Figure 1 (cartoon, rainbow, N blue to C red):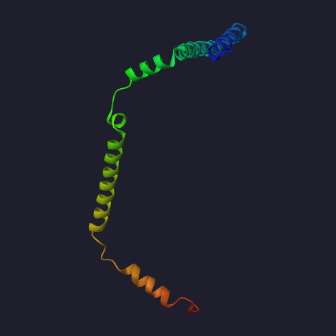
Figure 2 (cartoon, rainbow, N blue to C red; figure 1 turned 90 degrees about the vertical axis):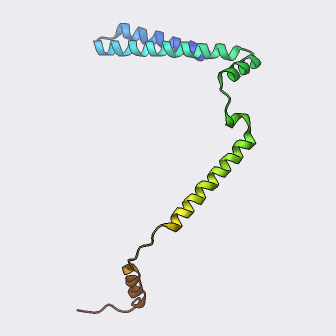
Length: 126
């Protein structure tokens, strides 16, 4: 059974549930679900019809709908351009990182030096 037929059957089942629903909100919910399943069924039917076209015809239609681009037209040139762009970005980041001003604060080094000199010593009792 095709997917569109299955969805159409689900839509009918939801319509039957809507007819037997007791409260208004359930009835509306089942009707909305039926409408959704009908819409999906139509979409699947259209897709199935497109797939039934010959493969060559489908490819021609797809080729006509896709716009030519630098990426699709010349693959080696596209790869070279991407490699050069990435290399330039890496170089920019490296130069930016090396040229940034270094902090003049050396308190961290003093504290680290004191910790390494006193490592292993018993703590002093106060």
